[in-house]
Length: 218
Ligand SMILES: C[S@@+](CC[C@H](N)C(=O)[O-])C[C@H]1O[C@@H](n2cnc3c(N)ncnc32)[C@H](O)[C@@H]1O
Image (cartoon, rainbow, N blue to C red; front, side, top):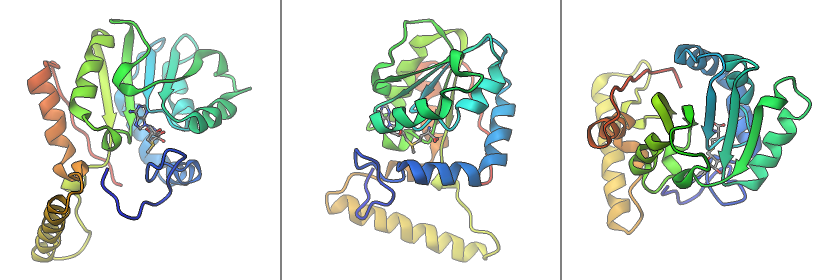
């Protein structure tokens, strides 16, 4: 991710990954996040991998959705986030269905064909090869399993209540700025490409059967 002056970094220097910031953000988005989970229509008893689980903020929502016969494996590269996730879940009623493991998303520590649903929230922007990484997770799913990716799509961002001409000029300026950064040797700010396009690539190139896109207020 190309950022000159990163904000809220975690111990690995990733921007917008600091635990306190993630917690504040999670609280401010609680209604939308609960709605997202409802819209996924989890099957009770599912085995779910939370890929890039961070400090485990989604765990209670996932646990409620799959019930006490389900299982959750949260995977992340950040030890600090995993310790926080463990502390958050320790002593809760759903503790016995949750495990956390340090691992890269590029090599999920689960056997082929074993997972009902892989859930990944706000991680795609940090992956050098997001489409390839998510596509490779297909092999970890049971037949008919699902990969659910939640992320910001800056490419579809709209400002409320300003005229469309001004919106267009803002986005053109953003594209020009991006090009300048690339010309200056920074890596391309991938999140601005538009997540829909990445998701469509998953479907077309890597043979996921169906793709559904839902949008939620940021
Ligand atoms: C913005 S946080 C999102 C955390 C959580 N999913 C949430 O929505 O609150 C991104 C997380 O992805 C993790 N991450 C980034 N790249 C990763 C990789 N290649 N493998 C595993 N985890 C990764 C970071 O350590 C961080 O915890």
